[in-house]
Length: 326
Ligand code: PEP
Ligand code: MG
Image (cartoon, rainbow, N blue to C red; front, top):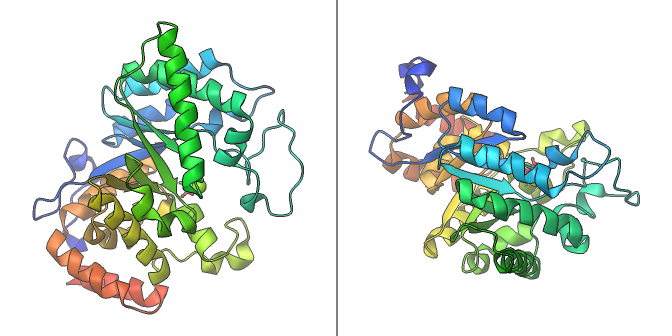
């Protein structure tokens, strides 16, 4: 099956469709507006993850609301109405800011980071949300909160967003009428509770880099336990399935923006599980589009059913590789 690859460039302007007509969206992960060039050169159908923390890094002070507004506007305009999922600040863990003093932690990946920090240091959060909402009229903005572990966190983040929106409207500032609000699913508690979350979010994006580290209890920065980064482990696949099924049951969409979304062994399984959006580094998009065009949704559904019942990461990988050889 994989022998039939066409040259990369011929996939540039095409939609991403399986050989039996099932469409999925291939989006790109970006860190700055400068990355848009690569997204266009590689046929990205949207931005599935804009990691806004890069705006805050490598400098001596917080970026102002105006500076943030300009960056978000540039990305939204640059994508000409295609979807742009902007993740609110995900700092902490391995990413530090020299101008934000935080106490040293024993386990920074389990500590004070991302939405936990933003809900506590609300001026930082509100400034970013103001900039995002002001930029929302320039394209199809979707806002995504990182590291959500509980419904209370999501509800609180949404309430802050609603307050900021109302303040802007009260001051006569225009805001897009409909902005989808979703969450990253990267903590196992949230994957397990996806059916409940799905009633309140507009979308999920599965952050497998963290979801795998937390599910396997294996620090993603520690090479000695890197063998536990097992994207095809049925434990991970079952969580992914729960999230996708929960989203669909409520008529919502489910994407993935961790490395796994661009992985050629994972893609056939994810197609079979019904993932709607795959967000990856721009340079992986054309290869993924070529691969997906050679897959049949019906066959991948059977394959994903089969691998969910297997026992190990390696055996799942082998089953997928063998199925693709046929
Ligand atoms: C993830 O955790 O999968 C993810 C996409 O976020 P980051 O890699 O930025 O933590
Ligand atoms: Mg993450």
